[in-house]
Amino acid sequence: MFLFRDILLICEEMGLLDGTKFSLDGLKLSSNASKEWSGTKSDLKKKKEKIEKTIKYLMNRHIKSDKEEASNGINYSERKKQIEKLKVKAEKIEKWLSENEGRQGKRGKEIQSNITDNQSAKMKTSHGVIQGYNCQALVDSKHQIIVHAEAFGNGQDEEGREIYSERIKIIEPVFANLRIQKGMDYLTLRGKVKVNIQWLLYCIVHNIGKIGGYGMGYG
Image 1 (tube, rainbow, N blue to C red):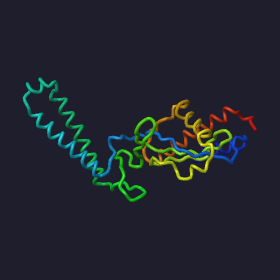
Image 2: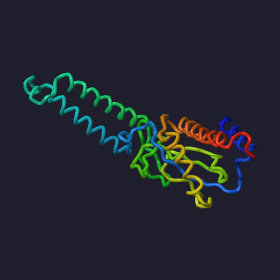
Image 3: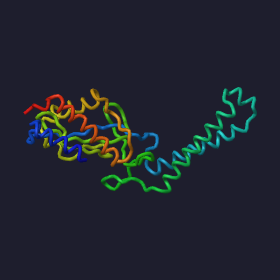
Image 4: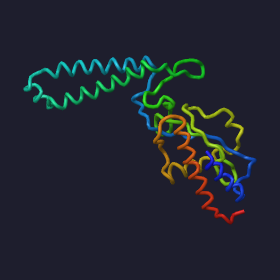
């Protein structure tokens, strides 16, 4: 993204970059994808079958007498809507299964796919399990300017992060600024390409804040 590069050039001109010491880490953010729609192909097939069994049960209940319906507190219209919603879910899973192969991990073993965004991943975080992206940032140590950023649909940080010293001291304030101060703790788009652009925009906001904080006369 040219804008990200241009902002970095301004940071360089202002003397905000050191260029000798960096920290690399990932911020796991929820994306516009539901955990409900995650699983291996076998998991999703079982989910579809379970939904179809529920539909069959509700259809049988649907033909019961009005008196029985009233005693259960569920009217005809509500049950019909419930059945239609479940049918849509079952059809959505069936369509995905017929058009997609299972997602493969690095070792060739099938990992969980996601129907709403199959490039996202289910990840464990300190806030619980999320469906989203591992948003990586490479941060210059001098003033915590983000010099490179990319989002990945897996829960593991990139190899090689250990070679960057003082990781916590350098990068944690950056993530805290984005999540807490800026409120950028959720991705609204789907697919790696779009999510990557959104993550770069978040990082641009952070870097512009640094430029504003130090002022154009710095350096």
